[in-house]
Each structure stands twice: as structure tokens, then as C-alpha cells.
Amino acid sequence: MLAGILTNLIGVSLATGAIILALTLLSFKLDRVYGARWKYWVWLILALRLLLPFGLPLPQAPLQIAMPETQISIPQGLQPVPGLPFAQAASIAGQAGRTVSLVQVAALLWLIGFSLFLLHQLIGYRLFRQQALRWSRPVSNSQVTGRLQQLSREMGIVRAIVPLVSEKVAGPLMIGFVTPLLLLPHEEYAPAELSFILKHELVHLKRHDLWYKLLLLVANAVHWFNPLVYLMVREASKDLELACDDQVTRGTSFDDRKRYSEVILTAMQRQYTHQTALSTFFYGGVRTMEERFRNILNMKARRRGTVALLALLAGVVLVGGIVSCSTPGSGNDAVAVVKKSLEAERNNDFDAWVSTRIEEQQRAFTREANGTFGIISLMVHKVEVSERVTQVMKAQYSGSDLAQRRGWTDEYIAENMIVVYADYTVDYDNAVAPYDEGTLTQVFILVRDDPSSPWLIWDSAVRPLDSF
Image (cartoon, rainbow, N blue to C red; front, top):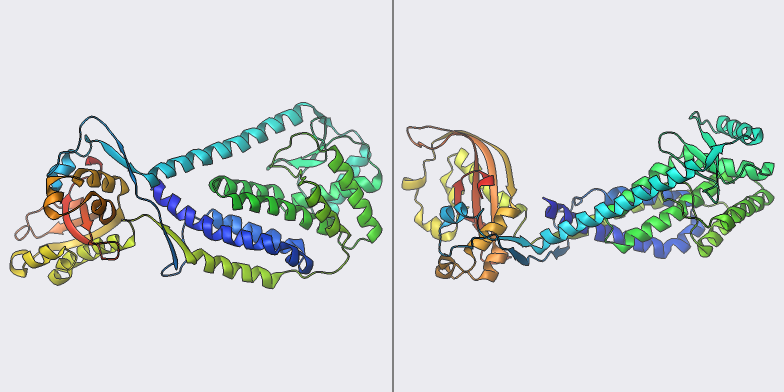
């Protein structure tokens, strides 16, 4: 299951990464036409897309990336016994040396990287919060508290905000997802400076920008292996501030914008201590701050970017269906064959049933001997590929006498054998078919001539999946 999620994530990561790269390269031109707010929503859409580990609906992705199916053997005492048929090979599978695919190893590494990334960020946030609050005190300056309450009313903010002065912050910022905490490095500000600072932080609060940053962080954690996602987070953080600046300076004069830039410059010069990503603190380097100042001082009207945003949505759908990752020997085709076989049994359709078998069985099975299934009812609950049992059976048959008799090389088995299991409930006419009834699990081994050929059922057995 984890390997399947990883292959889907890689496809999503590659497709979304292409959009991130294109947007970043075009940012200079786009920013001259559109305001920052449209890109604020663009990054949000892309972050959400990165967190959805499934492909978007194109029937066949033009760019198919096959994941390597290299196997790694993990000895566990007993070794595979060559030349055994399916039932006997399966019975010792749990005791034989276990094999794992390279994709499964990569999935484990991804999970470790995801956990470490997220843990690092959350521990950093907790430590910063503890330090900031330990060395803080309530704001005693009535000018600060009064102006904060006035601006909150004007902006329609009803949540209670706790203003604090902390020795551990270098510039004004806000933390707290449930209870907003406004942290200030000191409480002596000129009236104009104070208004700009408080309004900036209140805009962040009103737009739920801390939750926005949390979403970006989780997307970055899931795709920690993709450098383009780090680029997206950096660009999104910058555009978050640009959009906030636009809202703070909306309707103001050029002189007010200059004073606002000076307030940011003063705060930037003091931002020398470590901060946390889960706060409204921001400093993106000299080049980014220059871009921010140009944006603030730009008095030209720019478009809202609604058409560009809709075009981006169409691009996400299109590009998301262009790239697809898959592991060789797995997929919906094998599952479809098993579903067809079960449906044929339920409908007592011998021709459809025998068409799902390998060619030698199609010739050997006859309607007279094999065409009466005796099924009264059959309800299928689940049909899925079992990657674990697939690897077990590949290990059992590789190098076996049976494989040699059939002309199966180890390379053939690695690419052209798959195990699908089906959970279903069946009721038989016992006068015709005295088989086990009730809810059963049937395991199917499917093979194919080569990767371009269809899957066909070679063997099957009714047995619990955990017995392998």
C-alpha cells in the first residue's frame, strides 16, 4: 500500500513541479500584470494538489514512468524450494527468505524523510514558542492595546488577541492557531509605525495565513524529496507577504507607502534571531525585500488575475494527467481480468471465464467438464493487487524446476508475474458444486508474455491472504 502511495505521489510531484517551475520562471512578467493575491491562491491550489496522492482523469497518461522493480532478498532462515506448484510454494512462503522491491525500500525511506521533516518543524515551533513565552510579558502601553482594539473593530476581527512583549523576537510577529499571540520586540512605537505593524499582523490573522503556512509545510513534508516544492514554499511565503502588503497599503498615498516601507526596513534590520516557519515572521533575503519594496511603492493598478487563475486550474488538470508513475507488473489491467473471471462465474458464462485463463488452459478446459459453476449468488467485496504476496511468489518461482520447464527466466518472472486477491461472498448449489461457501479470499497468479501483452490467470487458490 505504501509503495502504491509513493508511486502516485511521485507522479503528482513531477507534474506539479513542472507547473511550479513554469510559474517561477514567468513570475517577473506575471507580477507586472497581476497583483500578488492571484498567486496567493495559485500556491494554495498547488499545495492542495500535492496532498492528493492520486492521478487526475486522463484515460492514458502520455508520459508513463515505470518505477524499477529490482528486488532485494532478506534471508529469514529457510530458502525457496525449487519446482513446487502453487499450493505448496504458498504454504512455505511465510518461512522462506523474504524479498522486497526497490520501490518498497524507497517507500520506507520516503516515510522516514517525511517523519523527520515534520518532526523537525514541529519541534522547532514548540521550542520557539516556549522560549518566546518564557521571556515575555503583557503589553502595558495603553497606546498599543487601544490601537489594537480599534483596528480589530475596523477590520471586523472578533477573536481575542493577546499582545505580548518578548525578548526572544527580533520583529513583530503572530503565532497561535487557536489563541492568537501578538509578539512585539518592544512597546515604544511612533503612532504611524504602530498602525502599520498592527494592521499588517491583523491582515495575516484575518486571512488565516498561519493555517496557509501550515498547509505549505505539510505539502513540503510530503514532497521533501522534490526541490521544486521547496521553491514553491519560498515563493508562496514571499507572495503571502506581497498580498498582505497590498491589503495594508490599499487606498493609501505614496508618502504612506514610503513610511510603511521604512517600518519594514527597520524591522528587517533587527531580524537576526532564529524564527519559526509557523508564524507571520518573514524575511526572504535582500533581493526578496527589494521586490517587496517595489511592490509597495508601485501605484499602478494591476489585474486581479481571475482568468489566469482559471487557466492555472485547467493546467493542473491537464498536466496532472500527462505524467503517470507505475510499477512494472502492477495495475488495473490485472485486477480487471480477475473481476471479469468472477463476474463470468456469477453469470455462468463459460466463454468469458475461460478467456481470462492462459492459452494452454483455454485449450484444455471444456464446457462439458468445466462449464457448470453451480453458483447461486456471488458478491465481490474487494479485488486488489497484493504487492507483498507478488514478491513472495516471484521469489518462490525464480530458478525453480517449474520455471525452467516453462522457460521462465528470473527476468521474465520479475516483470511478468503478479498476484491479485479477491474477497467475496459466494453461495453454491451443493448438488452441483460441493465447495466452501461464505466469505472467502481467493488468490490469483497472473502472467503475461511481455509487458505489452494482456494479463491472464495462470493459477489460483482459495486461502487467507495472511497465510502467505
